[in-house]
Length: 257
Ligand SMILES: [Zn+2]
Ligand SMILES: [Zn+2]
Image 1 (cartoon, rainbow, N blue to C red):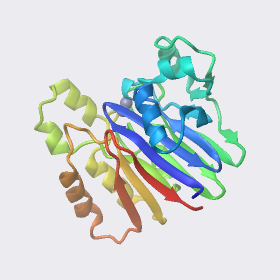
Image 2 (cartoon, rainbow, N blue to C red; image 1 turned 90 degrees about the vertical axis):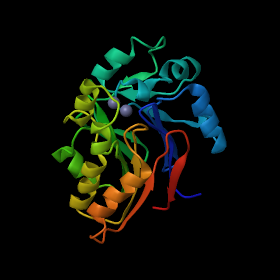
Image 3 (cartoon, rainbow, N blue to C red; image 1 turned 45 degrees about the vertical axis):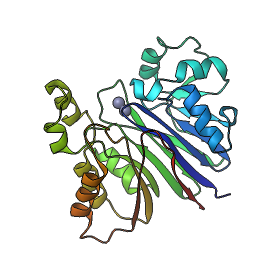
Image 4 (cartoon, rainbow, N blue to C red; image 1 turned 180 degrees about the horizontal axis):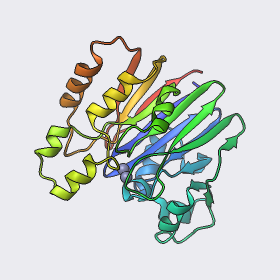
């Protein structure tokens, strides 16, 4: 088996959950899907929920925490979360003793998990980096813009999940109400295809793999996304391998590091 195995189990505004197997540990990032969906997804990868060592929560929006209540009632697995986010989430979950407040980096033997702030309209939202030996994977979704902290993370990741939420014109011309369009387009909203592509173009390049994630089901389409990335990245010879996450289908990458 390869020693890094990333599987995006679900990715969209209606539910997000990612499995990262690294250095002999199994981590979940967010449980924005039902526990049944999670169980079935893990089963299809020959795993069970009991194999998970820890869960990391990015923020309290329902598409990231939907399955937490049922998950915590049925499993003794630590859930790492920022304190302000826990204050909100704890009102929606019955069992609270499995939550651990994140204040600093966490070590699981050779794997170090760190968090960084993301500009998003939630209470203290974060992304995560998982470092193992000299390899780094980062999870960067739900952000309105690429801040200097996020740019640093992108520059230093060998494997990256990056939000590519919407096509700006499709969103502007689409059916969403004005307030929602304004929210998504704001600096605390979601990252557009164009902004994500420029973030990759402007990053200090290292050979890496990327999965574009959290695509809007209403305001994005694969053809437009590919066209935008081709226009922006096509002329430069970047050593990127890009995959696209699906709303309800597993998309994965296996690496030996
Ligand atoms: Zn989200
Ligand atoms: Zn969100």
